[in-house]
Length: 290
Image (cartoon, rainbow, N blue to C red; front, side, top):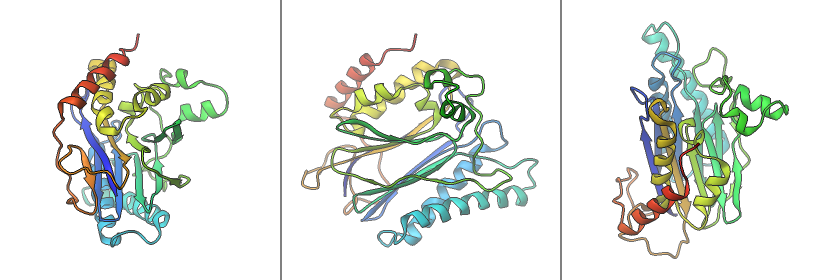
């Protein structure tokens, strides 16, 4: 499997970073995770770290080199992460249980399997634009679904940060299993915390990803979101891949991955001058919010 890849987490305007990300693989499968530790809860970053660590561990235990039952793996792994967070709180006698959102994607056999809990999002973009976006488990999303609020209004609603589904809650999480998607060369899967998606709209995503891969887009997109949020901005994190034609030669190209040849721990790629020019073009095309 040949991919353009991206993963990054920034602290934004916060004192610490409670987001955690993971991109790992075997020769035949890729696992992507974004977990956003909930800032209103003690040690939210611990819940996020437990989640990405355990999902990565279970993936490498069971993907040999791919998973027999992808959706079953997703459900069992997320449930195990939830229980591990509860166990951690008991063992350390915490006054409250750490909580986190999570969005997980698994790619194998040219198929995307995915799930989420909370308001960290998954997007699928192809040559026709935005094919898929996950639905947040939030109070404002319920209001949107009921026709009481618009997408634009949700971004400034006073309850926009209230979610009703997470890992670490006293009740078991409602794991939302998404419809599997066939992936062909040129399709991008992007997952992010709300620090990114709250600052960049669907139409803007479609615009900047048109005929571009994640390495050409994501660094600039992160910078746009960080600048728009300003000094009070949230942590912002993303993991993203664009599928490439199997015949393309990616040897020595920065930000590229051939799962059959490269190690599971991905080095941080250098950015070539051509991509830097594209970043400047994207930054110019997405001005600060008024």
